[in-house]
Image (tube, rainbow, N blue to C red; front, top):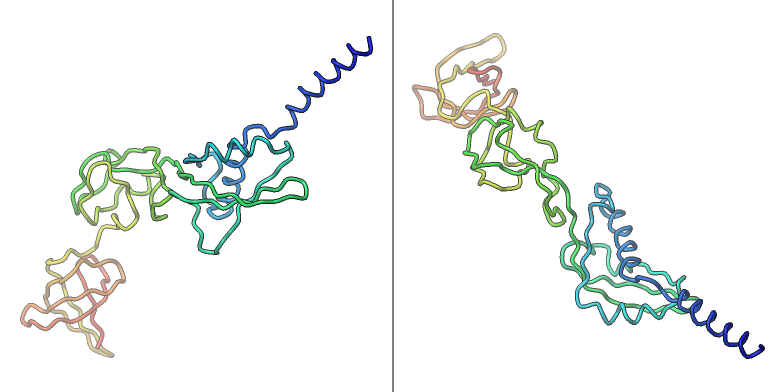
Length: 237
């Protein structure tokens, strides 16, 4: 009877002991890394992030021997450390009073639905809803000037030729100019108590209240003035 009880206790101890080992260290470390990343990039959420560990099987096998309450934290080696793309993460492993450092290779992707060109968009085209599509793409290494909403782009103009499937960035589009380069304009030359109008040519695209270069029809001299209407440029002297 005593032997049976003793055997039962050993069996219970064995199976209970298995529960003390760290379960799924990959997931636990991935969550720690995601928490670290979203503090660096507040515009992202944990749901946006996808982490793929590389050549880490042996490291994770060793971590499975740790107690269940073991914890991890990302070590910031230098302030400019960017935890995106292909990166090596330095981590501290804390287990009771013991700690050690490990290094894990990983690929970090930030997957967001962003605006892309549904077809070739030629320079100068007035943009329409049919020019765009929404696709989930990795934005981890992209400049932050991409679009997540195509509605704000409709009615604007393509500033460059945009290939099909290209990600759309703010610098690729802009407002329609009031005055087109090469168009005929009225140059209003003004001074205190004086206003003279003459014909001229716009040497660049012009926008409301912005300064552009123009030249008078009877002169090759370039002068600068402010756009005040769709066909008028004011030059103050």
